[in-house]
Length: 72
Image (cartoon, rainbow, N blue to C red; front, side, top):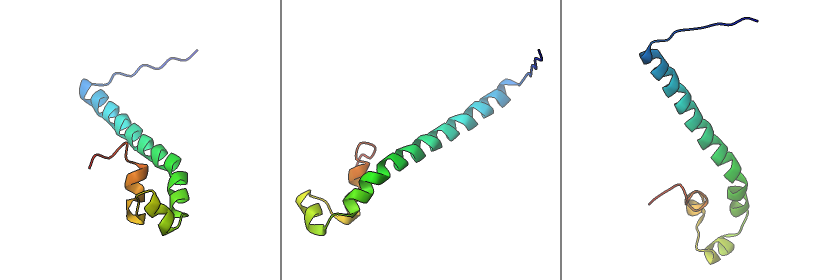
């Protein structure tokens, strides 16, 4: 069995950790937006009158769909 051992300085380990943390945050944001795209498309398909009954305008659809992530 082959075993490889690498020794990184604390600074390099911290930079690697930070890279993967940023990558993970980007993936989370991407996955969240992909999951909500169907909801946005469904609302975009509604008429202006239907949106008005919901208290929405077309410009407000993204904020409505992502309201749990946005504090205005």
